[in-house]
Length: 639
Ligand code: GAL
Image 1 (spheres, rainbow, N blue to C red):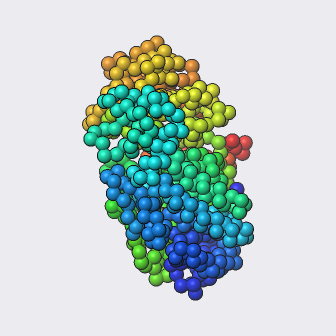
Image 2: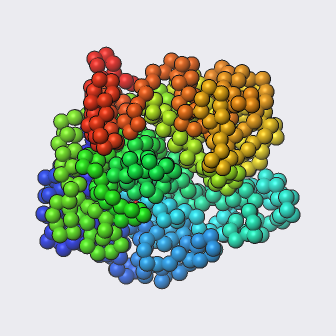
Image 3: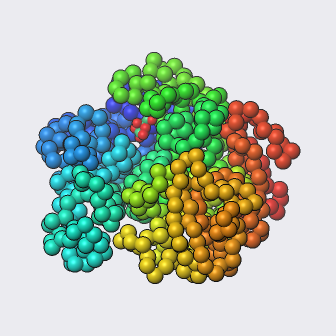
């Protein structure tokens, strides 16, 4: 596969006279893809039924003629004003019961059937008109599901759909009462029609009720996407995709991805570091203008799994964004670094957001590849350089990793429902494991809880997977060593503590005697080095103790291909666990200095230096903000 570059473009923002020059300049920069259309509903259909696609016909023609492949977006993330006037109850409701008003974007409730029908209608109209257009090489459905906190809606349509969903899940109200344990606090129901949404309760609602609502809300996103997929499929052979986000977990991306051909995501490394990562000030300062060295890679690897191996970066930060608390500029070299890093993780396309900075509207302070007055912004030269380097690099094929991490959206919903300790967060836990694997220089694959047992790895980590079910069996069959915990298998499907023992621990003949959570300044020392923080389980049982806490209770226990970790490890403890697991599974580690990361493709070892300064590693100097593709020695190819 030859990786390519692209850009997001809004022809409706610029005079038509500029389009041809823009297209020629994109091609001259080395871009081959252009995404358009995803917010243009008010221009496709200014009033109900008044279809105005002529301008889009011409835009596609101009871009396509210039040699660009077009990704056409369905405009359903931005319903126009007339739509909201026509369907006033289509607005999502927040948890306080307030409607989310017209005036920005994503102001719809996934459960509003009238709006779903409108989306299917516009998707079908577009598919009919452009499905066989030779310039349309992919379709993006909607834009960033869940962005701006829009997955959960407490509207009346959501309530009615939730009751219907529950009756499908449980069949009888007695089964629901039993599954949820509604005898607790006298909450037994006699009919599905009595069940409300779990907001505005006096104190914590029943956790099984909340988890059911979270599952339902995710299913609504899946169904919303599937409705447009069903409309477009018969009308086009081009691949269908969606652009996911960073650390947005409110819906099951694997389930949405199952209906699509390619996963894409929107990568804003500097914004993410400041607005959605737990890290100390030293780290945030060191990487202020580069982004966190693991955050982008984490999502590249995750979305490679969501896309069944096919994935892109649909929106790549090209300069300062407008939406984080502070918006510093990328250091010189970082736009190129982010792009090549994505390629090293298997991206087919890296597409910049956006072509020209808009002089109007909410994002007028968001950089593009061009300035609002049409001059080259600093990102453009790096995009051009990247294009030249990609042409010289040729084919890139991702290598199969020897290590995998399970990522499970349901676990995030469960642990957000009952965190038990403020520091226990599912993403944070999995990310800490990912960081540890990368500090050890390992390439990582993600696997979903619905994984096929046929996948074979040396090591699989499944920290914090709330409901294990038959996953435990599959994990054990799929690798030489599986490491569960902390909190893995701690609840049943209906959010109850499994009284017959936790699946993983049961196999090890171990029991949980007590669980404690800790404030940020307190941790539990593990003998030999490292600590458990946030969450600690006190275990008893017969499995061999591999590491123990200072009081002698097991911190890591296990046997025969299955280990269980009894706390949330700090960096030192994670590093010790990885070293020990590597010894057990004959895995080669490549310890990395801070800020330097390594990723293997079939042909190359890629070294990515997020530091501002040069780093010396394995006898090679890697400059600050630089990426180096080193060909594998002959006979050393990774498969
Ligand atoms: C993304 C979104 C784009 C634009 C961009 C700004 O979340 O898909 O439309 O808003 O952020 O960084």
